[in-house]
Length: 323
Ligand code: ADP
Image (cartoon, rainbow, N blue to C red; front, side, top):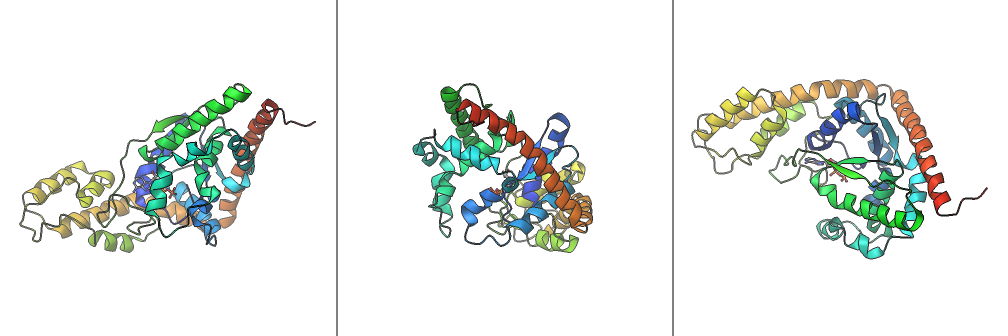
């Protein structure tokens, strides 16, 4: 994850929540992609390190466990940059220009200067991020599949030249679709500001839920409303474990027999119940910055040992290994 802002409940359902169970089955590596944060936000880097610590406190709050998985910071493992450089020698520029998000983001984020080599190259840096750990799987949502496809092509091309050196990563597709924003926008996103942060207080959560977008055609509580695609119900499905309550609310909403206040109050309660233990763990950690720092430095040292081994193999295969 890129340390470009505070984490929100979209990250919980779309990423963190999927990552937690993986820890029992795989040797997982989770990293804060601080260099990737620079690809779009190089003009203001003042918050990168503080978001790094803040985001990792959220990871642990959400149930990722540094005893089970390796947590690290990308820039504390500079081997990523060397592998990126070596890979860049064999990768044609049009491969990167063809990545769908390249043009898309240039068009969508008009306020940012995305003409840098860094931005063009970021899917290749992602390839290095993955290949340097011989990763067999990468947990990704649909939106990242094209990047992983590029990673696989790059690995195949590299291996064609230099032998069977790098592992081709496979996607481990996560199931949850995108969580819409509070404003009904199709994606909750830190760049839009339509988010509920994992670190919001119970009151802030309640206030945000009460202001949520619902069915715009339903101007009074006794008018039948639409449940499908209605963000309030998408959130109920995602966060309210009481399925009976959710079904009951949906039925009454469709029949025009429930007010928004009740639907939203119940949602705020469900969300706060889900966020309470996350907030608790997060607060405890942030009260002990030494521990947080130790987690990241120890994890980065561990990651670095693995990365250094891969890189030694790569240099050997490329015949640029000096002794
Ligand atoms: P970046 O840090 O590259 O800007 P994001 O913060 O948008 O990326 O997303 C980081 C991860 O969280 C990605 O795996 C993404 O799919 C997931 N994610 C972000 N927002 C949402 C959302 N609204 N719903 C579901 N998953 C999301």
